[in-house]
Image (cartoon, rainbow, N blue to C red; front, side, top):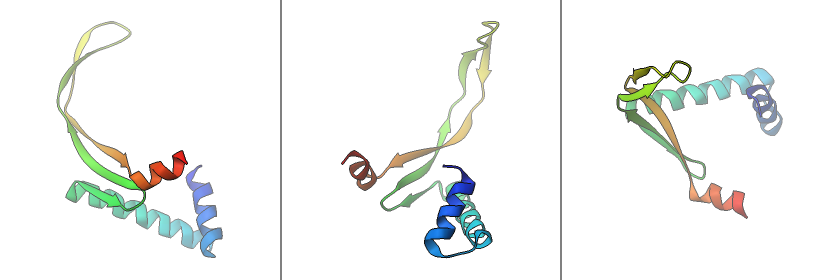
Length: 91
């Protein structure tokens, strides 16, 4: 499902206009990103939790030239699925 399809479904289910649904979805995404960035994560009951994870610097190589290189430290987001969602999907 694309973002446009999600907006259309949201608009249909909530009887909002496409513009209102787009604004609501963009606001939700903005809040999620801000919360993960400032507090290190967010848990959404029934869906799962997003958490900020730090990756340390590590050795790698260029697959084309086989030259070694250093992959710099970075941060990424990890998602862990809630048990309720897993049970729903697997039943």
